[in-house]
Image (cartoon, rainbow, N blue to C red):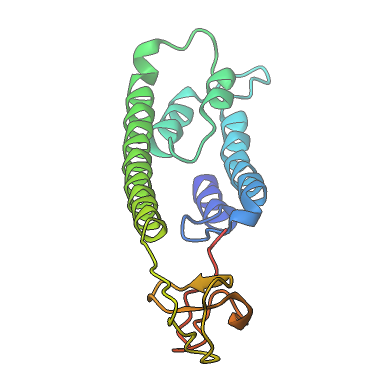
Length: 184
């Protein structure tokens, strides 16, 4: 009964992985810690020694079952010192397996983001290294005046206009195409 209460409390208060809001990372961590604390409280109840033997069996079962929701170091501090290692081996195996799966998943995401970043850098290099030929008779398509030695801007679609003809550096004044502000 108490374990079901902990499960429902955790589900209600723990942040979900799809609730990604970079502004509230601390807020998410605080909620996760609070949600984990309910299991620590239950472990304390199981292991409380008010003149009677602690309920080690249910405590170890809770650790094995909810290893991903319990703060491991805190939980291990609560176990009596005479708890045999063989009784917590399953817990350690589950935690190690869970953490290595999380690590592998994070490494995959990191490498995908790195590959995406490299591709963007290559695209930027290619765009920046493109040459623009301004000849004596090259005209600005916006104002129809000769560009000559005036300052000019080149949009990613190849359109070249006077710098003064650029109302918005992200929107081509000729085609109206929006190249978007860079994401920060």
